[in-house]
Structure formats: C-alpha cells, structure tokens
Image (cartoon, rainbow over all chains, first blue to last red; front, side, top):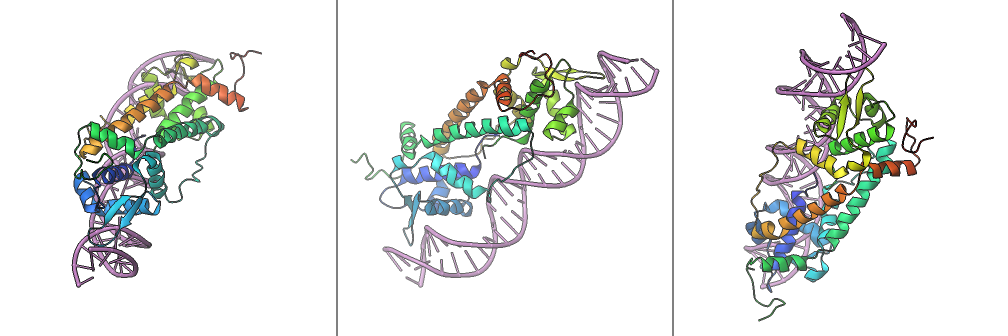
Length: 151
Length: 151
DNA sequence: CATTAACCACACTTATGAACAGTAGTTTGA
DNA sequence: TCAAACTACTGTTCATAAGTGTGGTTAATG
C-alpha cells in the first residue's frame, strides 16, 4: 500500500551507487545495473530524467558515465522521489474521484498532511547520510581512491 | 506511489460515516454506499472484516446495520489501515526481491523506519478526531438526535 | 412465518499501472 | 571511428486492484 514503486527504489539505489562507488571516473550505467541487478534499459530512462532534473550529470563517450551534479550532502532522497514520481504519472491526478463531503473535507486533507510530513522526512535524508550508513555497515566501495576522506 | 488503496480509503470513510451519522439506530450498508458512492457488494467485504476485527458490530434483521464496537476515541485510523492491509495481501511478502548490499542494508531499513513513523502517526489519529473535524467543517450529520452535544 | 438485512464464501472478470523490451536513431569525447 | 550517453516513442507482459456474480445461512422484527 505505501511501499514505494520499484522505479523509485531503483532511482535511489542508482544515485546512491553512483555516490558511493564514484572515484575520479564517472560511473557507467552497466556497472550500476551489474551491482544492483536492475534491468539496463529500464534504469536508463530514469537516469536520464535525473540528469535533466539536475541530480546527475552525464558524461558521454568512452569512459563516460554518470556522476552527481552536486555534493552528496546537497541531494536529498525527497528530491529524487519527487522527480521520479512526476515521471511515473502522466500529468497525474486531476483525478477527482467523486467522493462524499466526509471524504473531501476530512479524509483527503488528512492524507494530504501525512504526505507532506513524509516528504519533509525524506527531504531531511541526504545521499551523504546514506553513504555514511553504508560505510558503517561495512559495505566496501569499489573505488576508494581520492574520496573526501582522502588518504 | 504512496497514496492508499481505495479499499483503505473506503474503509476509513465507512467507519467515519457510521460514527458520524449514527443516532440510536445502527447504520445500514446501503446508507453508507449511498452517501459515499461506494459499490455495495465491494464495501461489504470490508465491513465484515471490520466486524470480525472488533472495530464494528453488526446488527441483523430489519432496521439492522452497523455500529462502532467501541467509543470513537478508542478507534484509530492506523488500526483500520492495518486490518484492511492484512486482508489485501494473501500472506504478503516473503518477497525477498534480490537486491544489492546497498539496497538491503541502507535503503530497505530507511523505508522501514519511515513506515513505522507513518503508522505511529496514523495510530495517533482517532475517529473522534475526524468527527470533530467534520463538525468544524460544517458537515451536517443526518442524525442529530441524542449525540454527545445534546440539544 | 415472511421479510429484512447482516453474514459467509468463493470464483470470476475487468481495469489499471508497473515493469520491462524494442527500435531507431543523435551527440559527444577519447 | 568507436563507445558511450542521450532522445523518443512504441509495444508487451504481468501483477494487482477493483468490482461482479451467484447462492446461499442466520438472526431480529412485525
């Protein structure tokens, strides 16, 4: 019911993967799909939206790939969710499904508020936070060259 | 993505409808479906689960219907959500979709925590709260006989 | 005792949307 | 010139939500 779609999960995984495994080189989409077991052509749609939305930058050509468009601490999970969700639905919902007064005036607003709270929560979580968690969990980055905690 | 299913929405609407329009008489399912525009046979499945789960009590026979099994302030939205969700999925998900380390150890736990926060929030909202909101919104109860705010 | 409405169960259909694959390119950098 | 990102639009598959159908049983009421 309120679990996120795979598309959203994939998007977050991908961004986190790029953040976590980035060395000097950009991360190629096939590396991501290899590590995260995400179908390639499916993921790329999303990646390219993330590029257009200013989360990632794409580097073309051989040895190309993706990197973050900003510092990790300046990218929030909420932002990614918003972007992917906007792309999931076509124009979304003027879906005024006919409802009663109780629905319109009481229940709908309640969900609206809840939704906002959730998004606020997600906005407060940054990719940097997740990277640190990953590090604490002992997940090894495939590239440990000249990251912020330099040698 | 994180909007609730219609079934859940219907269930909450129904319980609220019963709470709000209840006089001395129990509320019949056809009254609910009339006011809330919910298909009758569809709703009844849910109503009966709510009865079995101790949210509602059913009264049979002519002039029968449904009433709340407890005071309004002792029924939370979260409880309703849990009940209906349990019925939506058959056995639910040992769905261990294969995922990467990052997914399993970082992203999954994050959603888990969020989910808990959401449910805590929903547990804190009672049917009584919603009734008061409805009252404040100027929605007229179809029965205003011997409610708490007596004449 | 007939009527009314809740209760029960199961199976079936349909609509919707997520999850992907296909094709056919253009653009850019090594 | 090759490898990769980019663009875009289309089509297919599959799962799940949403809703119907049928055929009952049980318990109050008048």
